[in-house]
Length: 557
Image (cartoon, rainbow, N blue to C red; front, side):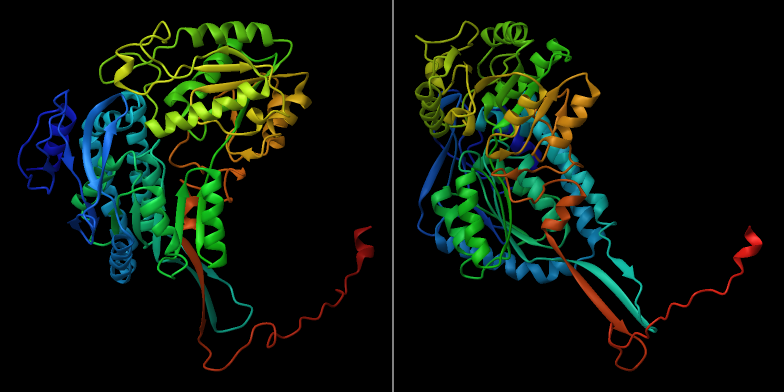
């Protein structure tokens, strides 16, 4: 059976009670909605493996908690080490594969993703609760990444460099780092791992991918697609488990000299821990971390456009993006007009399961853990004394907004929250709150607004709505952030632009575009001596004497 048929079966809830030729197995478990439960595996050296001790965990639909998508290995340290050994064994041959050939396999991945896109989108929405439209945009980002890096296989350039000595040639080459550990969060389970692994393998590296705990089925599917595209065994190895288990084992392997790179997307505290481990072991790391992203609205802005941008930035994906709007900074002259229009949209927000309801802005939290953390962090706004304009925590059938659709008891849904009268001294101004909440700050003038935009410890994304070109220029040159939108929201990226932050939002590395190649390769300088004798730069260079030219300048008078 072709892989596409398997995805279609899972996406459309047609149960298959036998082992598929592709290696997928359907459990006999009965789900109340008739959806199948997959028996999942680690993929190590192309082989499907259970955990070495047999332990498992479940992936459940956050919009329908009784719906179990799959049962997956709870990987042990031995499993992680097996995956690392497989990656090390595959590195030599893969790194010697011509870059255009590596690019062709990556292009095949993109074309298979296009072929399977609609069904993958439904599986992602079922597993993490994203709306179908957002899941589709994310899978398209993975496709775009593949197609972009397919062509980079023919542009993985070095340089020829002129020598200061005769009969000598100098060259530079990009070389792969080795084995890369890949760890990403579950809020972008398709795009972000492709942002990391596609350039990694393009450069000739091999990978051990620790799947997000809340999206193992999608990770399992995507890895199978990679192999169907022609990826050799061992180049990408998939392990499942918890961050405190398999994820920590992967990080610990840097202490043991078992990997050469860690790429992590997640929270700032965890990123700092990973950076410390990598730093003391001289292991390269890419850290894409949290954000408290500011959006500034100035009097010259198109207010309706600014409202749309702020609303989407704050509540799209239920606010579960590192680029979500954190601090909404509004000039006092347009504060009342903006907030009246903004709150009208907030109060009309449609929330529900996108697989069963149309035109919802957002669905459930990614999991019950994310929900618990969000409710805990909302306490910062309350304890700081911010004024709550909207939001009542967890949605239940007894406590739900007018436009909530469905049975709230089936999933884990949150109200949209808005807190006003926030100042930069408040903890809720400074700290990221991962979920559907925005903190609103009033600014006196442009200088005050720019100061507030820079006042948090984060620096990932930012935005300014203004039709004053000088203000736009001063904002984009004065903001301390990795990404800035002018008359656009804090969210959104394209596959050929660099993605990443500064300050507590990251360590300066970038995802996407040609810039990410720096994160997965090193420069190798080669000195090719053709003279047949020892020539030493600087030491054997004849000194050039500067003499004044004998020119009669009088004729120029």
